[in-house]
Image (cartoon, rainbow, N blue to C red; front, side, top):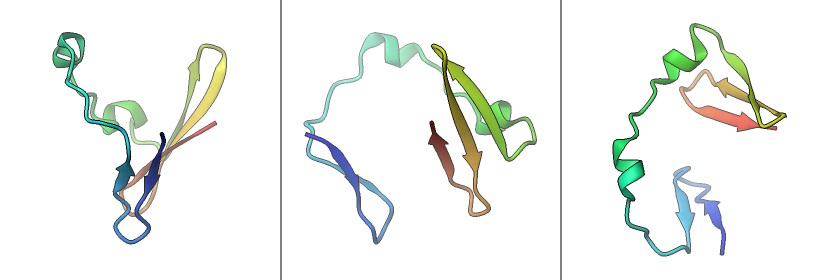
Length: 66
């Protein structure tokens, strides 16, 4: 099973069954993208030795790439 994107709306479509939110996920607070980007258009994130680039686009979307 995998997720894909509806080309027309940009909404993620998946064939995975819905899962209940665990107690750990309930306690997580969202982090504002502005707090991560701190006024920049992109930031690099080191996750376990792998670098990822988080980019904000001019139309307000975020992209995370390796």
